[in-house]
Amino acid sequence: MWPTEGRRRVRALGTRVRLGLALLALGTIAVPTPVQAGEYPDKPIRLIVTFVPGGGADIIARYIAQGLTQALGQPVLVENKAGKLRALAGTTRERIAALPQVPTVAESGYKDYEVTLWYGLIGPKGLPAEIVQRINSEVNKILQTRETAAKLEIDGASPAGGSAAQFQAIIRREIGVWRSVVGRLGIKPE
Image (cartoon, rainbow, N blue to C red; front, side, top):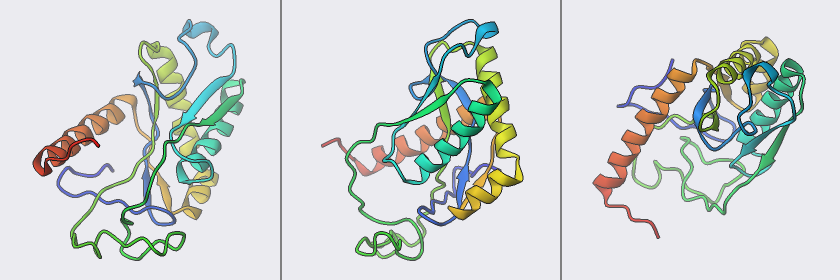
């Protein structure tokens, strides 16, 4: 079940995380240049993770890549391309054990702060629908296994899965929510 616009939760680093992995033929993150669906995949697939190695997104991506490698018969290679980040606040009720010096959002004065953290796969623009469907189907199969649920539970995550259309709707909703927040607060890029 996906979050509603009005109530969102983020619980990171060792707490519950919604995991929504669906492939969407839209953006910049996964899969090589488009090829004919009949021959796909005919070479290794790069899965680019825009977070640091060893974090939750990286661990989940590597686990999913392992399952896709087996399902598709081609290596799925995870590549981390993270920017520089500085933690301002933890979104859990308690301080994050790995970052004890970082206050929680509640400690910073926002008691009702709720956001849902999710992960997803996004393919390059123009990716054929057959390829989107195949990868989406394989990822959903991986997410439905007991082994996956157990693995994700260790990191406080729970598998959600879904269709590419559902994931696209989530992304659009999130963009709208956060665009509104940024506009209302007058946040400007530095």
